[in-house]
Length: 79
Image: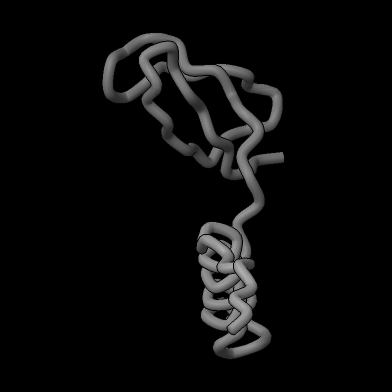
């Protein structure tokens, strides 16, 4: 069966090919060295089914990251 697979060579070049599952390595198109097949992350978008959901997710995680890095003002001042 043919699928799109990602390959990386020793020099760090990454390329993808529509290739048979039984082929574990190819020649790198940039440097002509052998490139090994790698397991690549799943690529998906929520916007296909839920419009705007990717933007909401990114905003929520950006706000959470800011909240974790902001210094907290826990000083209680009594007058």
